[in-house]
Length: 159
Image (tube, rainbow, N blue to C red):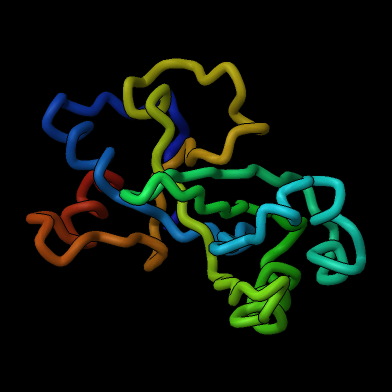
């Protein structure tokens, strides 16, 4: 099933609210959690010693979260050129012990671009990590307690 182009969508407010809650697995994106602070340099992470060894890195985004104890937790989102490279990074790097920290690596997720949902032109459609078309396969993550299903999502496409 092929996705429709942006111009053909006109979502209601209720549909926009539903679609904003969906996460989409992006198979060329990995999320690395529990990165040591000493590895938060983008250029270091791109090297062959670290994540550059698994393939061509297109983008790295650092994320810092402060937990309840005011302690910083670092994670990164790494976008590879293709799905095979990101899968290799996951298989090889998940659960590695780096500087006394066990890192966790898994496929990253994204969401629908707000511009797309509002039927507006996105200023950065190629650079952004957000989706600009409806996903038509099983890449959706819908929370179990969320009253919305994959079939309902497909009904948007069939409009």
